[in-house]
Length: 194
Image (cartoon, rainbow, N blue to C red; front, side):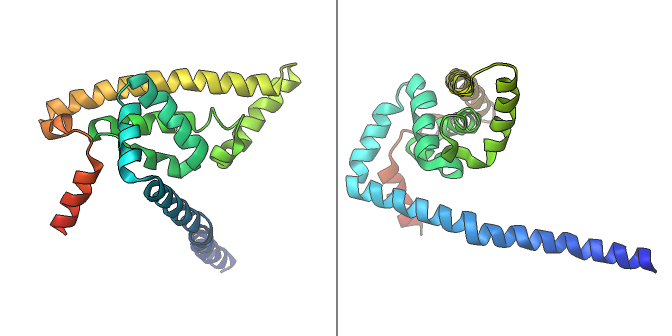
């Protein structure tokens, strides 16, 4: 009987733990995301959507900036998981590669700027602890992580872009490949559909 009681308690405990995680999301990450989305949208409105869109279109025209500077700015200023929203300024064909570049830079930036992805800080500090015990310098490790990360996100961005274009063509999704960046027109079309 004790075994059945313990099993039932453990079973219910699993759902209690899930409920605590869910409430943590509701009181922590979701309000943070709503506040960040609101702030970014307000900033874009304040600067002017046309100005922001034109600047980002010029910036993202070049692959090296599209897969280095844009993800770095997104991760540094918007942190994880809001950094992905900077991809809204890209044509659809580049979004998978931008996402890959952002995801790949979340850990390398943590050593220099822990605010960017604070959940990963314990991983970096664990590695840095072993590195310093072996005689290394933690600041140098953080810098090398970031520099290596920039190289990696550029390579991954290019590879993912090529793969995405290959699969878009193979699956006959040519409308994605022919689409130009016009966020304002997209917003108008969505409003008309609604």
